[in-house]
Image (cartoon, rainbow, N blue to C red; front, top):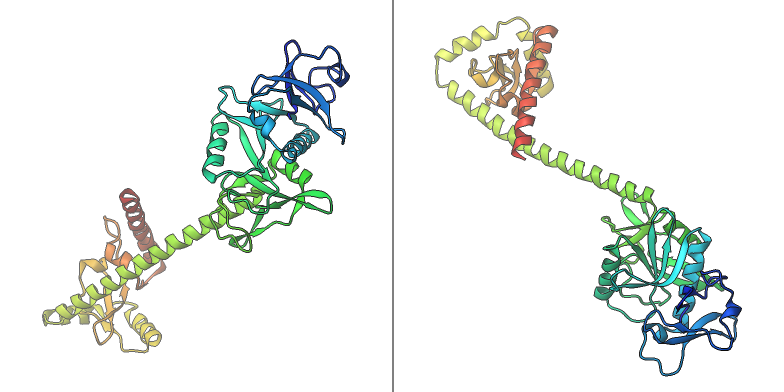
Length: 387
């Protein structure tokens, strides 16, 4: 059986439409003598109009027909095609049954379209088919700009979610869409409850449901490559993934900064211990300890770290930007007093070591902050060039 046939003058006839799609009454072709010349759009064999015991209008092949894919489709398949077409028409779409692609490489059960040029293939798939086959058929239609959705009422569907697809079921004599529909919550996908078939069709045709390949865990739901979700949920997942990527990037950067801090502080301690082998450095350290504001800073550090704090002998080291190092008894660097702005950007050492900086006046602090910002911008630019 088929819902479509071809007339030599009227062209394509659609038994699911009141006027057969060509402003012709059903009585003009059903049980008339002589028979109206009709042929199958698939195999070209003769056809005639029939009505089932339940009042379903269709076309049947005349005796002696060759093997034809339309004739091999089951009644359940045909009835589901009819429901797909009726649902599309209820949403204001034009629905044509059993339409072939321009090059004949594909045929869709129902081709739903709008005046604006949108096209959506609605496929009833009740027979067994492999994931590779259904993916290939989907890709052939997609190459012509035709979106698709595959429908099945089988309980076990191995290809569900491989392509845009949905499992249907009967609940209280009503056809409902069961899966895979999901909503994004927190950091994972959770199943949407079943919804009436008509509502599902309305959502996919109006893009309130879109096919989406999830990138987050799927909780309490069949894990699929592609599910149906609202655009809001798709955007929520994308935002969450961006935030997670940003947190991971920040964690990696902090880990790199911590590593640089460790090396820089080891470097500072080594420089201090080396300076203490030169007696002439002691006089310079004693002189620096009498700078204005130094006594107050040393007292603050001693209270903060609960240790004795002194001016380091490595005073004058270029890594401190002409500032004065303040160390504990073991030579570990605790702070730098009054590092000075220079012509060049802030030394990498002071950006890496991550220690306290003290200044005798607020003006000196502000001048150094501008100097340090220049160094940070230079480093950021250099890191971007490396990436």
